[in-house]
Length: 135
View 1 (cartoon, one colour):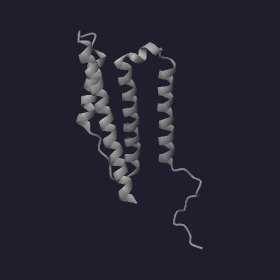
View 2 (view 1 turned 120 degrees about the vertical axis):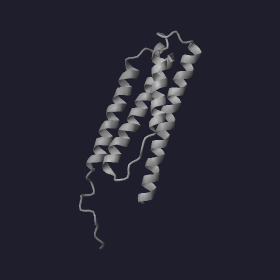
View 3 (view 1 turned 45 degrees about the horizontal axis):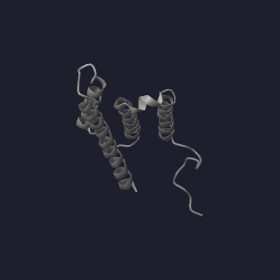
């Protein structure tokens, strides 16, 4: 009978995986709290959509940080795209204070969401490429 080269028991969960699951659970809990304690009317605001997108981007960046600790080859986040997303999100946040037209505030919100989505997709694609190289 062939023996396994892995010394750990088959039912053990690696520490990095456990941290990822805990962090994902905490972020899901944060989203659940936001949805639970927010009125229905507030979800028609562009800012609410930006906040949910930012939480999703934070989840991907946290996953990136935990995964980069585990592996030697690091996936680099698209820094300029993330900065552009943050700038657009801040523009959306302060649109009322600076008397920005509602159409421009909505465009800034969609630009922030787009930046966070593309950045997250690029990071997840890098994860997939790493996994395919290791197999």
